[in-house]
Length: 285
Image (tube, rainbow, N blue to C red; front, side):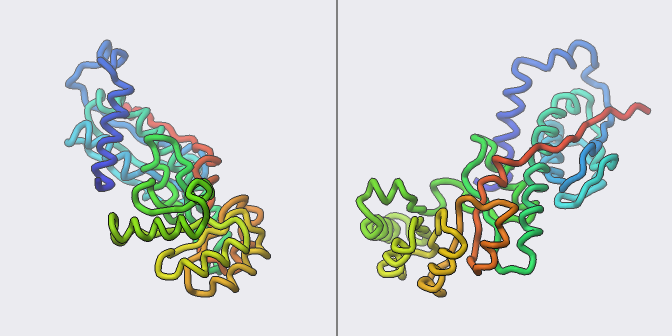
């Protein structure tokens, strides 16, 4: 499915979850024909994310909604600023309010934290990746928050890349066997699917280098110290892409970048991000 198709599915399921058999608070006191206006107010500094998502939510519920943009996704936002204004039926505003805020607050928190990481990488060749450590059924927008913040999306799920991690390797009976079986699977079942292999030691790296050419496209260096990564890169040279993972944070990310590794992946971009404070307020004329 495309991004928009996945987003429409997310919106539909989220509105069903929230509205159920009816938004009785609104139905009880607001005429169905009443029109209104609301403004998104920024209550915390950070990086704004989710503007396009908010517009799609309102337009999904009511295609005639008029959405006026004051700031764009990825822009720095300051307390007291306005992000957008929406004019539509009051029922639509009240039924979409919490979904819009939940999405934008979470996405903006992720984008803000991601920007802090990417700022640390300025001047280095190393690029920042996210992981699959996401909230079930909300991965689409959490990864979009990373992208808006300046990071790159790693594989979206189990279907769009083969990643041979420690458990795959151990269950299969070793690195060489796992690589050979994965390469055969790709050739026979999924031509073009890329294979990444996790290594746990410099010795593992030597083994992947020996058997992985033409099969493996990226070697993950998991829980390696920066000096171990430098040693591994001398073995890998330019034959494979490289990714450092495990224990990387804002305090030490530059040490990893100085090694020249191609990518660093940080699960904390998503699972350690804090939602930012936004509010959707009625405009009474």
